Image (cartoon, rainbow, N blue to C red; front, side):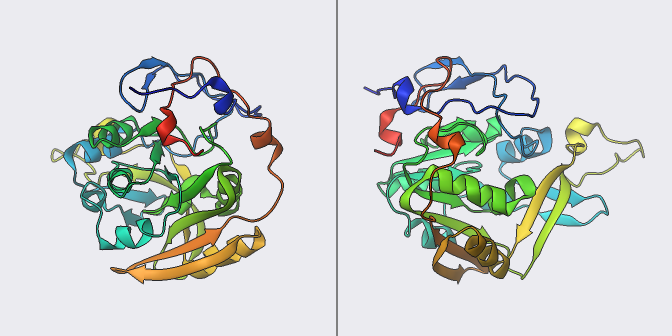
Length: 298
């Protein structure tokens, strides 16, 4: 029988200066046995339209093409087929380094959460895409429809955070993302991040694009089919740049390695006071989705 975490174990929404439309969908418990209205997340920093059709459609079919498109036409291919497959040897090189309960940030279709569970880790995935969360749950993984900048269960107690598959780019501000990661980890916690395989440190605005372009009759394909039109901030960070950002934030480098032409770093949480945002979050709205206690760090 599953149990739920009492409200005192969940984080409260933070005050904000940013306006955001209320979230009116339903969010299920990670054990799939209960659902309720999710709270309006006025404190969230929304980072990308990953619920838009090109991404959702790619996850449903398990294949691309799918790209991040810059305004000048530059395309960054997204490896949907790998994301929708089982965890590979490069993934395992990161997962075998995990310690304690694991939070997979931007979990996508859930291959890492599912693999972590098979390895005996307590693991939770978060993603802003309903399709990603649904697919993760179908694999038997625990997942919540949240941004990393939303209030999250177990803040300040996670053993390991994962930022793989380019997710170090979330929000377009690596320093802000590292700062948020430090708030989520427990003392001495580990951040494992995948970096770009080239020496790059760039901020850009991109949009999702499925590469279909105009229809065969020359008319523009519907936006819901062609792309997510609203650009959003993203970042591309290679290992040297990642280590520079980490040092500036007080992180300690634990390891860096490569596998199957992918590159990774692991970092130890800086020793510092918790931010006021995290330390003030002692309870979440009573309407928020419950989370089974076995998925949370003790």
